[in-house]
Length: 224
Image (cartoon, rainbow, N blue to C red; front, side):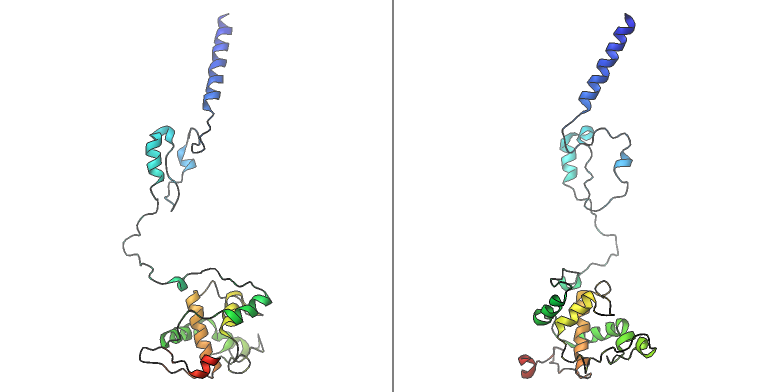
């Protein structure tokens, strides 16, 4: 008899424990036997590190959830002070022949043509492009001279009328044997390269600049 009472009591306790352990609170993971297995010891940005209200009360947990986990940068960090063109913003034109043509018709540089932008573009061109296109954009880079890739067009002849939108589209996606450069150079850097390529399209002739270093646009260029 005593054995049956003990068995019934144990069964009731287990059943009660099972029913009370169930919860409908979507914010509670239940009892965490090893919290470190659930919550990384390393602080990760924008992660909710609010503790389980079961242990710290809902008031404390709610306050924790309103606290951003990102912290101030360490001493000596260099703040980014650029503009949107420094970021990899979404590119609206698809990687299709239609997208290429549409970019040529619609896409214009967001940068003013300045001496400093052309100079920066020339530096990036020398680093990223001369191995194929050559220093003067004549398609006579080291890869071409070695016979690995032939027929690279001269900017001042075959590509002298290539619009800036098609240049940017090509730099973003790649074209033919040329691969994409979108992951290697910022969007601003790509447009600066294009400004330098536009100089090469004119045989290396630099535009005329005003006292602020901004290119003076002629009437013929406006009509173009």
